[in-house]
Amino acid sequence: MRYILLAFALVACGEVTKRPDAIEVDADPCTGTCECRVDTDCPGDNTVCDDQTTSRTCECSAGYTRGTSGACEWTGVVRDPGFGAATVWTAGAATIDPNLTDTGILDPGAARFHLDGLCKLARITQDVVMPKEARSQPLVAEITYRYLSQGFIDTTAPAYGLGAAWRERLPASFGTTWTSVRSCLGSGQYAPPAPNGKGAQVPITVMPERVPVNCNDASAFLDVDHFEIKPANPNECPASGTALNGDAEAMGGWVFTGSSANGNPFSAMIEPNVGEANTRGVRLFARNRCSNLAARTAVSVGLLASPALAYFNRTTTGGTALDTDFSLGGVTLPAINASTADQQRKLCVPATMRGDTIDFVAALNLFGACAEIVNASSVTDNVKIVNDPTCGTDPAISDPGFESPNSLIGAFSTPGQSLARTLNDASMAHTGNGVLQLSVMQLCSGATWQANVVVPAASSSGGPALSFFYRAPPPANYNFFVQAGTVSFAPMLDSQWHAGTVCLNPLLSGRTAPVVFGMSGGSGTCANTIPPETAFVDDLQVTTDPSCPAM
View 1 (tube, rainbow, N blue to C red):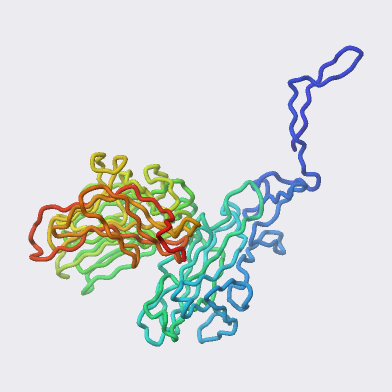
View 2 (spheres, rainbow, N blue to C red):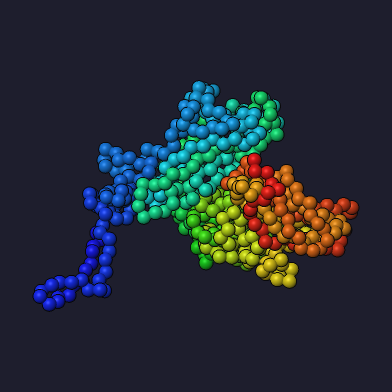
């Protein structure tokens, strides 16, 4: 309780006066039940201190209701998760069919994206009150869907946003088969942390991931049968800012897959004495080529200002036909070369993944003659999220000035033939010390880097765009290019710095837009080495521009 603190002094005639240095503090406005001040004053993991000014009581978090035992139990936040009514969700150019009862459907009703719903990436939305992550058990989003088309020319899956984080790249579902996917919620999908209160309003959005080629086909439907938020199973989801069993000291948390030709031996498992400092680690081993192995775990990026992914790796042997294919949230990470030395890897997490929980995949793929014995091994350990200020704090793009010394996510080149990398050289940069370098030096090769940016909403000043600075040479064999979806940019090729802008798709507001920078072209005898041709890119900014469409 807050008090009024007064200091008094005695004066003549017995009067009592307040000293001039007295301190006054407002009285506590709570006049009713005042059983708590902050959430942690309340018993139970799913309770909060609900401050209503004149009262402060311990209540269940948003989505929870007291059961017969008195404990707060999950009862849900999504209204009409089965799309059984036409008025709960806002459908726009899509529709809600509450009477759909096709074979295999979980419950009557579905959200249907058809014609304009597919071609214009319509959104179905609903606002829900989510609990705070710290005052809730781990939660998952579960979505059930299918893509129905007589022609099967193309397909798309749904994408959904919850709060600031979007879940994309869901598996495709064809024909009458319904597919259900569970995904752990990330920190950015709960209510923001606050000292008290049951939770906060958070938007849910469901839409097609992309426009399918046959979106104008009257037989094509993307149907979403169910969208619900549920408690996670034990050990299903990582804690905020961690990887699920990232240090591999326990036996769970990782999902292993593998295959090998001709029954050749391989293994994919957690093993003792193989990890960093001889601790337990995730080990992928293949005796022969024609083996494909993978280990997957979930990573919660959390709410760090400048998150980076860090992990330990030791990959030995395998020869030239070795492909590690590590990935984070479906984005391929820089390749790992076989070495007898331990490697500490660190990469800036793309801004599109902040606040989300995504998959980290370690993979070992060996190509060539299946009978060749290589005894290839790749060990991964201590997967974690760390705060790295060099990654920047821009909410729409990580490391926009290429100042981070970390390995560059999204770069593709061929060793000895092309190069895509961050160069730390102030004399080459537009500003600062870092710059993106794209070089080619052999015919039939090329170099690219893909930026994954968060598309801003259109504003009164124009539609969403990515601005940048570039310096590219007149083309001898290769051309510098910038591509954002179907939108291209026409560069000035004179080896001077220029400002550039490429428009982003306004229908992807809040979601990921890939923008590719590259050097391409070149024809002739592929083995021929040519004088290097190099382009530089620097100082990216996600913005709006009057030359870009707002709708």
